Image (cartoon, rainbow, N blue to C red):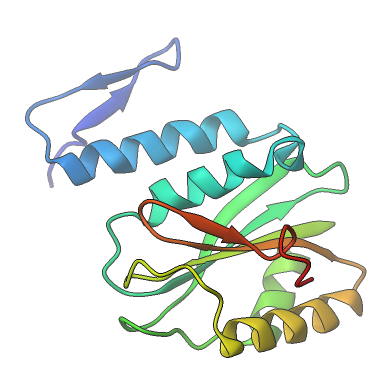
Length: 164
């Protein structure tokens, strides 16, 4: 079993162990951002959430549908990849999303997925699944605060576009 390329010391600082690839560095950057976001009010700066998801999904060659589960104060509880698809889509099941929201005792959620093509314009399917998720989560009093579509260099916010 191989040892991690990056280790965290007692002070919470990351240290390099051995050689690393650029994608390893991106993964560590995403971990650091996630550590800094946990327990803080994520919606105080939505661009930070979008940037984190960009880092987390930057190296993915297929579409990943993720969620930032938040408490009622909009502090991060957990980030999770819920579904993985192909180069141009991922199947998203509202039932699974509702189960995960209940499992994490979330009061709110931010969705995000990547477009490996680099084009961040939300598709009709993106809009439809977002509406279905909003409706399903409303039944259990979980608010959808945003849905980001990200690529390596840009993102689109459904909330900023008035699509929620």
